[in-house]
View (spheres, rainbow, N blue to C red):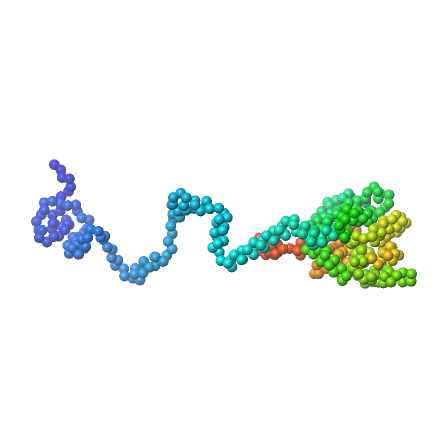
Length: 455
């Protein structure tokens, strides 16, 4: 019968096993061969604890610094848990219960735990955000400035040329000039609550037999005053004009301080050498005074003068009986039928004639410095290309309010000038965010890649 296990080695035969005192005889049984190379001392086995609940201890032989302080060092290191932190709670508790709380309740709870100082800061930030949204991103600012800022007292009349006039048809560049000019006036009017009336300056049948293209601005001023009964002032602008400072209102620029801005005596700048004032004895003192009555409320027309005299590319007229009378006389056929072949500047020369001969007209007119509402580019009133005239030409460093491209259709590039002043106006009036993008980010990008980018 075969054995179930191999026999134990005989003690003392060199096959291993325990060396026990008093056991010198063979047991007759064999045990599996131990893998150890020598016997284990019985004394060392007796020294081990016999408590069955204890574990075998490990004693390190390394007594260095790292071994002595290993536990303290390892406990100070961060511990990472690869498992997802979730609450394993019953239904109705934990994240599900939090998600069931209304948003208003959560906001109220968070607000209640805030300090008083933080609450005041958040409240001020909220009020500032609401005010900015209401007054700068909604139409309310238009109606506010129109009603309470006096915007409804002003109407801008822009003389467009839809059909190209009589002598030439508009091309792509002419359309581009008109598009930029109309957009510029519309943005300015919407910003300050003004009305904008765009009129068609192309020749109509009722003017075809009279040879007075551009004279119809007189007719348009009269019809605009009838169309807007609440308007006090109308501002006529030619198509080739551009508002360079849209952040400045007409009230701040001129009308809040009209007495200091206007010149009643034409002798301050008199390129046509008009004799002023009248000296006839039959006239009253106001008509013979170089400044009229000296009161701002008696001024019914504001205009400028360039190197050739009166300029009607940009002028103001106030609603009054005097204005109605002047428009009737100015538009009368007697004024132009005999002189239309001699007057090169048409309606401007007609007004010049009325100013020289009619005392009742002169005492109600005022003059603004040309750079106030009608600055010229360097090519205008400067046929020889000489230095700029400080009274006439646009000064970039002083940020003139408006530029008029007068005479650009005669040998100059209207679209090139319009594009230049449009881009320069944008550059002058950039907000802080636009300055940051274009003066920092775009410059860095150009230095890194060598490519210009428009952000």
